[in-house]
Length: 241
Image (cartoon, rainbow, N blue to C red):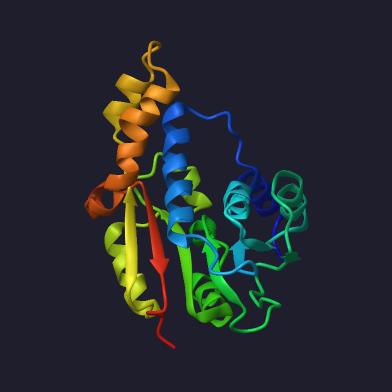
């Protein structure tokens, strides 16, 4: 049974307050954009994607791309916020995070997206991935994120609640999870650019997007592992049985 504090954390994560620094905002933008790019467009009008408790903006972006959104949340309260701030869900279920037994038919989704929950310490990541594997169709894909130990969110207080992954640890657990071929995006946050240039009072957001954010989107596949503040993984039909 989850604690009230856990439920509060889930609500804050699903809602995601926009009142953050510009540097954090654009780091999030890169994460959202690459997540939705890796999921891509639905192959048919009935394409189904399962969003496993991501921040609700991810659900909304996929809905705009034409996906039928099914969603899982890990508390009643966070589900209420997802319905309030998110798109129209085709299906929406609440699952006890200590009993990760998804109530969907096997091989029923073209894609699964999971931005954030692999950082929650109260979730069994191996069981979660096993459930995701069951739900994916043979040619489906799963896109998930892992906050690295270089994340600006990583602090002694935050580490009490969330797991921050080193690059070596990600490599190790992917091998243990037997996920097969993986496409990996190391999302950077050039601190000097964000702190010295973007915070300049003369810098317009649109200009910054054109000069910095858009080029970084295209360069993400080429950044080395050591610069990733967020790591986004696309697991496709290379999943092992």
